Length: 90
Image (cartoon, rainbow, N blue to C red; front, top):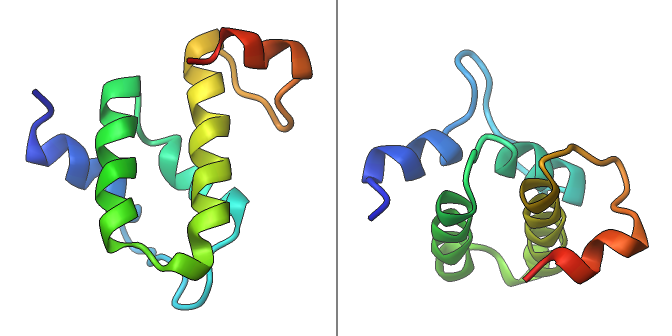
């Protein structure tokens, strides 16, 4: 079970900063998702955003979610996820 505190820590901006007031890009969402250290927490935050998020940003959110899932699966950070990595991502 993921605690509410874990979800909030992935959702809240760093101290002294705020999230974009306008549309966030895939990179913005990826940086936000990188605060999540486990796939379980990432999935919880993603599910929460799906219900709360803007349909216009849906593609950027989904792309960043898949990218972060690949990073957590491989244990590495990627600027661009190599094609061979996708076969390991569930």
